[in-house]
Amino acid sequence: MNDKMLKRIIRKLKKYLGLIQVEQDLSVSGEVVLFDRNFSFHHKGSYLDTYSEIFNKQIYKFNPRSEKPIIIDCGANMGLSLLYFSLNYPNAKIFAFEPDNTVLPFLEKNIKSFGMKNVQLFKKAVWNNNEILKLYTDGGMGGSVVNNYNENQVPIEIEAIRLLDFIGDLHVDLLKMDIEGSEYGVIKDCESKLNQIDNLFVEYHSFIDREQKLDEILLLLKNNGFRYHLSQSYSRNSPFIDKDLVCESFDMAINIFAYK
Image 1 (tube, rainbow, N blue to C red):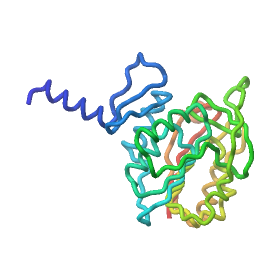
Image 2: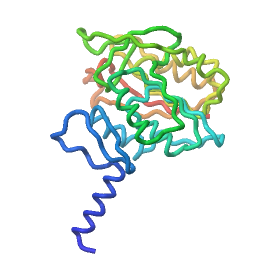
Image 3: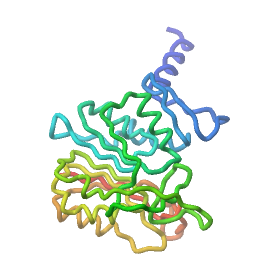
Image 4: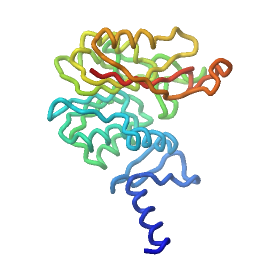
């Protein structure tokens, strides 16, 4: 086998795995062949970073206790996490929440493209109450109901569902929560349901002008029988000096992996 043929084979393999980066002259949104299907994205950088975390590092990999695990994905975005869950846990029942109408068309298209029959999508936010909220979106990179991304931003109204009520009597194998700053209030409200959850992923966001709640979240998890592992989501090289935002209106973002 000559070098030219070997390079062609490697390129085809990378294309199959979704590892070939979209050409730089493409627009912000686009499409890539992933596992022999078309996957649509709203932002190429977000797609590449998220793909690396989910499929290369496999940050959401877990061992379910049951043959038909229950997975709740709060903040499904374009659907890479749903695709990972659907492929790796085909017998799972997956409940997905995503309120941002910037990414919803891409998310719905991907669910259909990959035939994710085990995914039930709710076009709503999770919250500590059932109500109508104002969502501030940054073009699909994130959407927050507790903080705007710039002074001139006009929010959209969305429907929110109380996660506590949705969980009800469900035994949840994995609860994934990436909800852009709402996590503390939702987790605190769901404390009585934590005994029904085996694994919990939370991306914690620290607002630059508000009291930090990371310690309270970790204490709440510890008091409810969880151990936890922390990893950086965004970081600053010299935190004592560099006190600028690391992501939108946050000065820190930490991934929390909690398990029993």
